[in-house]
Image 1 (cartoon, rainbow, N blue to C red):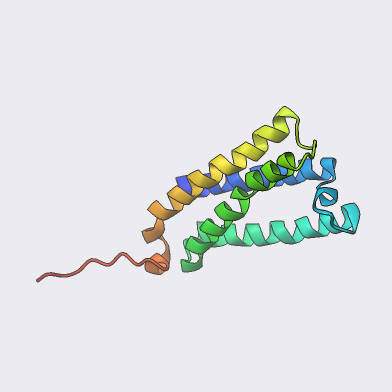
Image 2 (image 1 turned 60 degrees about the horizontal axis):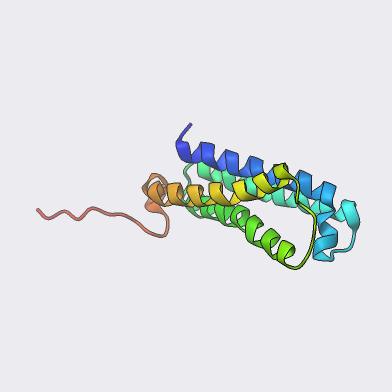
Length: 138
């Protein structure tokens, strides 16, 4: 397994752990969303299906996997700014040490994943939106 693949799995694991923690803290109430735990569970089912599909494009090194890896990193990376805004607004949820560590972890690992994705861009079939072609000078 390549380093990028392992980092993406770590990132997905952190997001899933955060969402389990979010169910404990009733995160849907922080967002003002209706439906309670039922709608929150359906949202997470859809989100996890999307993230796992994106991951499948990463490990297969399909051309879409380049964007998929950046999307995983971006979606995971916004967890910290969102919760920093909640804390600034006065919410007291997610103050336990593991909750904080998981939130910070998603951000740090997302940056790491984005860097690794950029470095691995030529591994994806077609090189993604930034093809690296060699010019024949002969």
